[in-house]
Length: 332
Image (tube, rainbow, N blue to C red; front, side):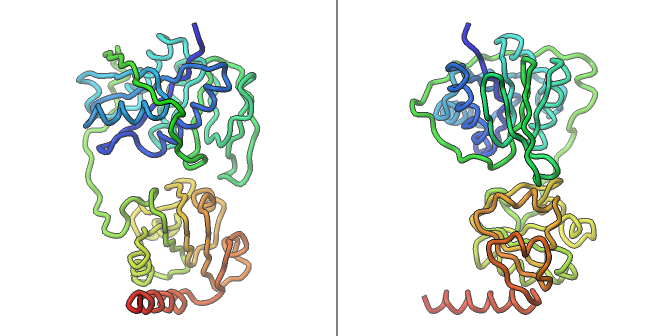
């Protein structure tokens, strides 16, 4: 029987989420290096549009899709999703199990590693060797890379967000769909999501997918100090991102936080205003293609690491940028 790689795939109303597509792209490369291993996907719980998900998975090279279904999967629970993945691992004899490095993917992978007595490598950025399986992963909030060799089977990995571009398979597939109802214990059903609430996001929609992100830190000074930054994000068609201290002070909501304990972003442009650039925040924004720092401290880590920097008062600089954008827009 050929080797198998199993990927836990997260979906939403639009289909396979971006980080899952990135993970499948990396997994496909590993499968090719692993002697042409078969790429399997596991999707757990209800799916809005199954045909779209199957087509997306086929375009990424998945040969088999395992659909875990059942009444107990209507609400998310880390234990039930992990139980479903483990059942697929045992059925297929998978040698590698991979999930995206999202909060949910990381939780599931940790459960799977414990249940299979496997070694887990979190925040992987590259696979350096297939045999023996050797990876490089982010440690210390992304400030350093650690080389790690995984000797157990299955090996369990989570892939850091935005470490590779989504790329279609050279030859699309039509995945074989295997539907099953996982078996659960009472312990698996003890903790689950009982309610979700939609968050109002007038200026923060799609933070992780935004091409431009305007960031604000302690240097913004207050909740009202974000008005100019919000205007700049609107003018550029971007989103607002903030540092941890901003959410701790209650100036902006937590779902806007960028960093090790927030979202990891990879926009074309990140404008960091009044952000010192602590290692935890850098872990979330270092994948930005271009970083512009605006800060009155020329020695701040964000300023020294940025591609471009403007040293001065952000409350003078940002309004001037807004005025110039409006002037050029009107004159266009």
